[in-house]
Length: 253
Image 1 (cartoon, rainbow, N blue to C red):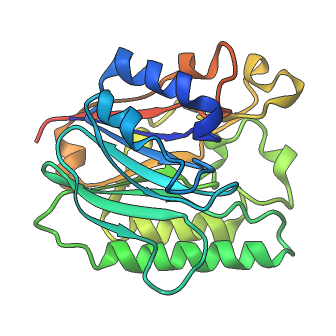
Image 2: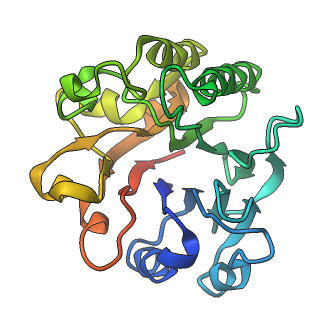
């Protein structure tokens, strides 16, 4: 199977890039974030023409997550079931795996209420994955808006006192991993930055000023079956790209 997570930063703006990438790469499952569409606007028909089923949890101008699959899409769930009004997590069973597409809150600033919301959201995600059925392999992917270690940040000093690198955020990721999940990219590439996001400003992509915040957490069954994991940097190039690149995992189950 080939599973990819990708924050597309508006599926309306990025549809040509996304559909082109699908045709060139033919993933089995795509976990999409920041679609910035309502369910009514989501291109279900467009994905169907490409050979994919899809499920979407939309919110219009903000947020929005989706799962797109050509290996089946069953038992979709939207949100945590706790009344959170923001469209940030969707799950489904695709072929032999249970997958979740996550768009973790940004946090904005350490003294902002949105940062408290971010930590609480990550705690709810931890509770969700801790209750997973171990008989069903899991992939939990998305834009986590946290760089797990200093290796995942082009210049940690540039983020001193800011979100994405704070110890509480990193501890929250550690709690998710402690449920028995593996940060797949880091497992396979222990010494490489593997950045997945670059700011549009200041020539950040050209200068290599990136962060690794798009993550694939998998259980040990998937990790043991993985043959490759990589960031498709080419998708960040060209005309009107997302500021995120796809992160891909290939495994055999």
